[in-house]
Image (cartoon, rainbow, N blue to C red; front, top):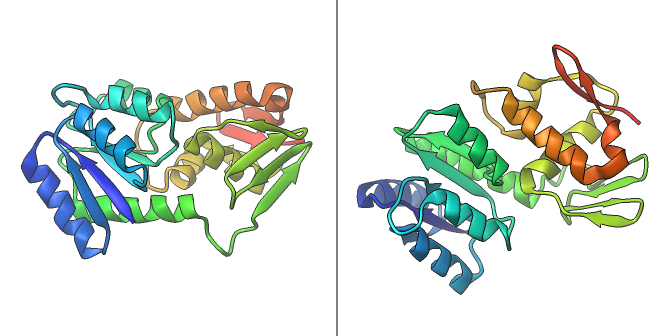
Length: 222
Protein backbone atom coordinates (compact mmCIF):
# COMPACT_ATOMS: atom_id res chain seq x y z
CA UNK A 1 0.00 0.00 0.00
CA UNK A 2 1.23 3.48 -0.85
CA UNK A 3 1.59 6.24 1.74
CA UNK A 4 2.45 9.89 1.12
CA UNK A 5 4.40 11.58 3.95
CA UNK A 6 4.28 15.38 3.80
CA UNK A 7 6.52 17.42 6.13
CA UNK A 8 9.03 20.23 5.58
CA UNK A 9 11.42 18.60 8.09
CA UNK A 10 13.51 15.93 6.36
CA UNK A 11 14.31 14.17 9.65
CA UNK A 12 10.59 13.70 10.38
CA UNK A 13 10.00 12.32 6.89
CA UNK A 14 12.93 9.90 7.24
CA UNK A 15 11.81 8.75 10.69
CA UNK A 16 8.26 8.05 9.52
CA UNK A 17 9.47 6.47 6.27
CA UNK A 18 11.83 4.06 8.08
CA UNK A 19 9.08 2.78 10.36
CA UNK A 20 6.56 2.44 7.52
CA UNK A 21 8.99 0.65 5.22
CA UNK A 22 9.61 -1.91 7.97
CA UNK A 23 5.89 -2.71 7.73
CA UNK A 24 6.19 -3.16 3.94
CA UNK A 25 4.47 0.09 2.94
CA UNK A 26 5.64 1.95 -0.16
CA UNK A 27 6.42 5.52 0.91
CA UNK A 28 6.49 8.74 -1.10
CA UNK A 29 7.68 12.08 0.31
CA UNK A 30 6.83 15.73 -0.22
CA UNK A 31 8.53 18.66 1.52
CA UNK A 32 5.74 21.21 1.07
CA UNK A 33 2.04 21.37 0.39
CA UNK A 34 2.21 22.17 -3.32
CA UNK A 35 4.58 19.29 -3.95
CA UNK A 36 2.20 17.01 -2.04
CA UNK A 37 -0.87 18.03 -4.06
CA UNK A 38 1.01 17.69 -7.36
CA UNK A 39 2.32 14.24 -6.41
CA UNK A 40 -1.06 13.03 -5.16
CA UNK A 41 -2.91 13.91 -8.37
CA UNK A 42 -0.03 12.85 -10.61
CA UNK A 43 0.09 9.34 -9.12
CA UNK A 44 -3.61 8.90 -8.33
CA UNK A 45 -2.91 5.71 -6.35
CA UNK A 46 -2.03 6.96 -2.84
CA UNK A 47 -3.80 4.93 -0.12
CA UNK A 48 -3.15 7.26 2.85
CA UNK A 49 -1.57 10.66 3.56
CA UNK A 50 0.39 11.70 6.66
CA UNK A 51 0.24 15.50 6.54
CA UNK A 52 1.98 18.22 8.56
CA UNK A 53 0.13 21.51 9.12
CA UNK A 54 2.84 24.18 9.21
CA UNK A 55 4.69 24.11 5.87
CA UNK A 56 5.99 26.60 3.31
CA UNK A 57 4.33 27.30 -0.08
CA UNK A 58 1.03 25.64 0.94
CA UNK A 59 0.08 24.61 4.48
CA UNK A 60 -1.64 21.40 5.55
CA UNK A 61 -5.08 22.99 5.78
CA UNK A 62 -4.98 24.04 2.13
CA UNK A 63 -3.62 20.65 1.05
CA UNK A 64 -6.52 18.99 2.84
CA UNK A 65 -9.06 21.29 1.16
CA UNK A 66 -7.56 20.66 -2.30
CA UNK A 67 -7.56 16.88 -1.89
CA UNK A 68 -10.93 16.61 -0.13
CA UNK A 69 -12.58 18.38 -3.07
CA UNK A 70 -11.83 15.28 -5.15
CA UNK A 71 -10.91 12.39 -2.86
CA UNK A 72 -11.79 10.69 0.43
CA UNK A 73 -8.30 9.23 0.85
CA UNK A 74 -7.55 8.79 4.59
CA UNK A 75 -5.54 11.69 6.05
CA UNK A 76 -3.59 11.71 9.31
CA UNK A 77 -2.69 15.27 10.33
CA UNK A 78 0.53 16.05 12.22
CA UNK A 79 0.85 19.22 14.30
CA UNK A 80 3.26 20.78 16.77
CA UNK A 81 0.27 22.65 18.19
CA UNK A 82 -1.99 21.26 20.89
CA UNK A 83 -4.76 23.82 20.39
CA UNK A 84 -8.13 22.05 20.26
CA UNK A 85 -9.39 24.64 17.78
CA UNK A 86 -6.81 23.38 15.29
CA UNK A 87 -7.92 19.83 15.97
CA UNK A 88 -11.57 20.68 15.40
CA UNK A 89 -10.71 22.55 12.20
CA UNK A 90 -8.90 19.46 10.96
CA UNK A 91 -11.88 17.20 11.61
CA UNK A 92 -14.23 19.70 9.95
CA UNK A 93 -12.02 19.63 6.84
CA UNK A 94 -12.24 15.83 6.73
CA UNK A 95 -9.07 14.77 8.55
CA UNK A 96 -9.42 11.19 9.84
CA UNK A 97 -6.80 11.18 12.60
CA UNK A 98 -4.88 13.90 14.43
CA UNK A 99 -1.41 13.30 15.93
CA UNK A 100 0.45 15.90 18.00
CA UNK A 101 4.22 16.31 17.80
CA UNK A 102 6.35 14.92 19.32
CA UNK A 103 4.87 11.51 18.58
CA UNK A 104 5.83 7.86 18.85
CA UNK A 105 6.58 6.44 15.37
CA UNK A 106 5.31 3.04 16.53
CA UNK A 107 1.99 4.56 17.64
CA UNK A 108 1.73 6.47 14.35
CA UNK A 109 2.25 3.26 12.37
CA UNK A 110 -0.36 1.51 14.53
CA UNK A 111 -2.85 4.26 13.67
CA UNK A 112 -1.98 3.94 9.98
CA UNK A 113 -2.66 0.21 10.11
CA UNK A 114 -5.92 0.62 12.04
CA UNK A 115 -7.17 3.34 9.67
CA UNK A 116 -6.35 1.29 6.57
CA UNK A 117 -8.10 -1.74 8.08
CA UNK A 118 -11.22 0.34 8.60
CA UNK A 119 -11.05 1.78 5.08
CA UNK A 120 -10.61 -1.64 3.47
CA UNK A 121 -13.26 -3.25 5.65
CA UNK A 122 -13.23 -6.03 8.20
CA UNK A 123 -14.32 -9.34 6.57
CA UNK A 124 -16.11 -10.32 9.78
CA UNK A 125 -18.35 -7.26 9.68
CA UNK A 126 -21.84 -7.35 8.28
CA UNK A 127 -21.46 -5.68 4.89
CA UNK A 128 -24.83 -3.92 4.65
CA UNK A 129 -26.88 -2.15 7.29
CA UNK A 130 -30.46 -0.97 6.77
CA UNK A 131 -32.84 1.06 8.90
CA UNK A 132 -35.69 3.44 8.15
CA UNK A 133 -34.92 3.86 4.45
CA UNK A 134 -31.15 4.20 5.04
CA UNK A 135 -28.97 1.60 3.32
CA UNK A 136 -25.29 1.56 4.25
CA UNK A 137 -22.93 -0.66 2.27
CA UNK A 138 -19.68 -1.00 4.21
CA UNK A 139 -17.79 -2.80 1.45
CA UNK A 140 -18.64 -0.26 -1.25
CA UNK A 141 -18.53 2.63 1.26
CA UNK A 142 -21.86 3.93 -0.06
CA UNK A 143 -24.92 5.31 1.72
CA UNK A 144 -28.32 5.77 0.13
CA UNK A 145 -31.42 7.30 1.71
CA UNK A 146 -34.72 6.31 0.09
CA UNK A 147 -32.68 5.17 -2.92
CA UNK A 148 -30.76 8.44 -3.32
CA UNK A 149 -26.97 8.47 -2.71
CA UNK A 150 -25.64 10.64 0.11
CA UNK A 151 -22.09 12.00 -0.07
CA UNK A 152 -20.44 11.48 3.33
CA UNK A 153 -16.86 12.09 4.43
CA UNK A 154 -14.93 9.08 5.74
CA UNK A 155 -15.52 10.06 9.36
CA UNK A 156 -19.22 10.77 8.78
CA UNK A 157 -19.56 7.33 7.20
CA UNK A 158 -17.80 5.71 10.18
CA UNK A 159 -20.01 7.62 12.59
CA UNK A 160 -23.23 6.57 10.86
CA UNK A 161 -21.99 2.97 10.71
CA UNK A 162 -21.36 2.97 14.46
CA UNK A 163 -24.80 4.45 15.14
CA UNK A 164 -26.55 1.90 12.93
CA UNK A 165 -24.60 -1.00 14.41
CA UNK A 166 -25.76 0.15 17.86
CA UNK A 167 -29.36 0.96 17.01
CA UNK A 168 -31.43 2.12 20.02
CA UNK A 169 -28.34 2.08 22.27
CA UNK A 170 -27.40 5.30 24.11
CA UNK A 171 -23.74 5.99 23.29
CA UNK A 172 -21.56 8.33 25.32
CA UNK A 173 -19.30 10.79 23.52
CA UNK A 174 -16.31 8.94 25.01
CA UNK A 175 -17.46 5.63 23.51
CA UNK A 176 -18.08 7.23 20.13
CA UNK A 177 -14.67 8.92 20.08
CA UNK A 178 -12.84 5.78 21.18
CA UNK A 179 -14.57 3.65 18.55
CA UNK A 180 -14.80 5.96 15.56
CA UNK A 181 -11.37 7.56 16.06
CA UNK A 182 -9.97 4.23 17.22
CA UNK A 183 -7.88 5.53 20.11
CA UNK A 184 -8.32 7.08 23.53
CA UNK A 185 -9.17 10.71 22.87
CA UNK A 186 -8.78 13.42 25.49
CA UNK A 187 -9.80 16.42 23.44
CA UNK A 188 -12.96 18.47 23.24
CA UNK A 189 -16.32 16.68 22.92
CA UNK A 190 -17.28 19.34 20.35
CA UNK A 191 -15.48 17.12 17.83
CA UNK A 192 -18.40 14.68 18.05
CA UNK A 193 -21.02 17.43 18.06
CA UNK A 194 -19.52 19.01 14.93
CA UNK A 195 -19.59 15.72 13.03
CA UNK A 196 -23.11 14.83 14.19
CA UNK A 197 -24.39 18.25 13.11
CA UNK A 198 -22.93 17.82 9.61
CA UNK A 199 -24.14 14.22 9.37
CA UNK A 200 -27.68 15.16 10.38
CA UNK A 201 -27.70 17.95 7.80
CA UNK A 202 -26.66 15.60 4.99
CA UNK A 203 -29.28 13.04 6.03
CA UNK A 204 -32.13 15.53 5.70
CA UNK A 205 -35.25 14.55 7.64
CA UNK A 206 -33.65 11.17 8.44
CA UNK A 207 -31.14 13.11 10.53
CA UNK A 208 -33.82 13.10 13.23
CA UNK A 209 -32.99 9.42 13.77
CA UNK A 210 -29.83 10.58 15.55
CA UNK A 211 -31.22 11.69 18.87
CA UNK A 212 -29.36 13.69 21.51
CA UNK A 213 -29.11 12.04 24.93
CA UNK A 214 -28.64 15.11 27.09
CA UNK A 215 -25.59 15.04 29.34
CA UNK A 216 -24.32 11.85 27.72
CA UNK A 217 -24.15 11.58 23.95
CA UNK A 218 -26.35 10.24 21.15
CA UNK A 219 -28.66 7.40 20.16
CA UNK A 220 -29.72 6.18 16.72
CA UNK A 221 -33.39 5.28 16.82
CA UNK A 222 -35.91 4.79 14.00
